[in-house]
Each structure stands twice: as structure tokens, then as C-alpha cells.
Length: 415
Image 1 (spheres, rainbow, N blue to C red):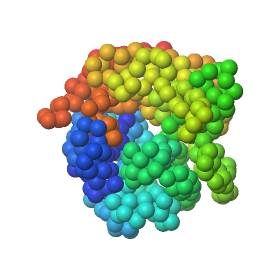
Image 2 (cartoon, rainbow, N blue to C red):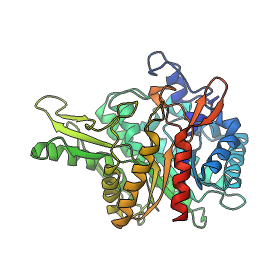
Image 3 (cartoon, helix red, strand yellow):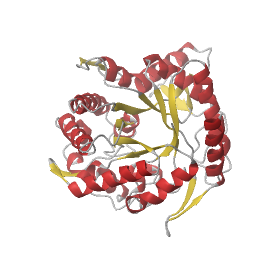
């Protein structure tokens, strides 16, 4: 599976009331003071982007459903929006692209956010209702989508929403962070159970897990090593463990230990989506917060993230411990000048190849992203696209890296 992807809120434009819509219209929340009201207008121009992906040579396209569009209030469904998403998915297929569809990519309808969001007692059931509705609607005349994902990067969502406060709901509360993690696991499990009762043939369900390669700042320092292992367990593994074993445990220094056993009936993941953006160096300190994380010393992206292809091999080996087929569901960089992207893709695909040689079952690679888009709290300034966006005229222009990735796909498919 070779492809690209993006998320609904980042590209669709004209979004319905949501926590992120409100966040982007609150002063000081977005680095460049932009918003996603128009973005790339994918909602209306999806055929243009699917045509670009086809020209690229991709055979897979990852997209997401905007919950706020399809369920405008609890149990009130916007059938017109659901039909529009069905048209999108059919167009994706018509362009020779296998759709990979995420049900929740960071954004909540405003009516859910206003009553506690992920931390609400009703969230588990509400998400399961929504997931079942969408999957069943897209399968009325037979399943259109084989590859589904419930949540994108649950640990990123809870960290920025409840630890740093940089994303909605903007809290800094460890107990709420723990509750949000617990509720996301429970919501995933409930949604998968509901979807499986639909008895849809060959359907595959996963999450997109943001997986970092946590390395000790000093390999000679045992506390650095211990801290790196702790972060690896909490950030990379805990959510996946809970989805597969039902052992839902959460603990961080300064918090109470939480554990429960959920009925997962042999596991709730059919494959594992891995979003990879680099390694992080971990060290300890003698003062609060006691653990510090920093980027490595390698070349950086426009957002200051280290470029470290070799760590993708490490990450894939680590994730393979669950013995689930792995889809690299995101990998990309902010690179306005497009001077690093072609080599970035070539090097990361080579690192993926190393993992294959070492026995890891990798399904494919999805570059993030096809076009420039709204990069959450950073706004429209970062440029992640193989295709450059003129946001005023909505003109799409493939960058040189687009053609480099195109050539690489052709080479690998022919080898």
C-alpha cells in the first residue's frame, strides 16, 4: 500500500461547530492566527486531490470523517453529510485508491465538548453510536471501506488537551489526562464490538498510534534509561496493550495507579497503524517535572523536529512485538522550501525496507500529506504537502518531491 493522507478538519473547510472550530477562533490559540474555515476546500474539491494522488501513482488514500458534520446533536444525523462522504469514498475508489478511513481525528462536535468531551461519562457510548452509524451507512450496498481506524494518535490528543493545555479543552490536569486515556480505550473497545456485530466481510479495524523512538540522553545513565523505558511504555504501548488484552492501566509519576480489565474477546485490532515523526532524547532532572524530553542532534524540519530515518526501523521492530500487520499511516515533515522532502521519503522508505528484511510485516507507507493543510495549533504556516497550496486561489501545484515520490513508487512496484 503506497499512498498519502490527510484529516477532515485540516482540509475540508467550512467546518460545523466543534471544539477545534471554537479553538481556532479564540485569540492566542493558533501560532499564526489562522483558522481552518476554508483550508484546502477538500469538501468540494476532493476529485482534484484524488486525481493528484492517482497521478502520483498511489494506490491508497487515508482520510477521515468529521463527526461534527454527521451527528449535529446526540442522535441527530445529517444524512446529506453522510451521503457526501459516501460520494467522496466512491470517488476515491474510482481513482484506483484504497480508502483508509479514520473515524476520529482529534476533533469533537461542540455539543460533546460542552458536556465534558472525552472525559464525559457518556463519551464511550456516544462514540460507539457514531462509529456504528458511519460504518453501517458506508456498507449499505456492500462494504466500501475495508480499512478503518477508530482514533488517531490518542496519546497526542490527551497530552496536548490535558497535560500541556495547547489543544482543546486546554486543561493541565493529570487526573483528567488519566480519565481521558481510560475513556478513549473504552470507547475504542465499544465501537469495535458494535462494528463487528455488523458482520461485514474482510473489514479491518485499527488505531493510528503515534509511536516515538524514546532514547536515553546518556546510555550510561541508568535514570535516563529508566525514564525512556517509562515513556515508551506509557506513550507507545499502553493504549495498544489495552486494545489487545483488555488490561487498561494508566500511571505517571505524581498520579494514582489506575487499572481495569475490559472484555476484548481476543483483541480489538486487526492491524496496527503507526504514525512516525522521529525520535526523542530523554533525560532526568532533580527538580519538577524530573523528566525532560528534547529533539536529537540531527537535521531538523521547519518545526524543529529531528529527521531520523533509522529510528523508523527501531519503531517498526518495537511495534511488531504485538504481531499485528503494520501500516505506516503517517510519516512526513514541514518543509516549505521542499529541499529535504524527497530525501526524507527515500530514506524513510529504505528504513521501512530494513524492518521488512528483519521480519516485520509492513503493509504499506502513507506519506503525510498530499497537500499542505491546517497543522493544528501551528496553523497554515507549516507546509507538509507534496503539493503546494495557494490558499487564496485554492490552486494546487505539485512540488519536486511529488515527482520524486512518484518515481520511487514506480521503481518499487516494478522491482
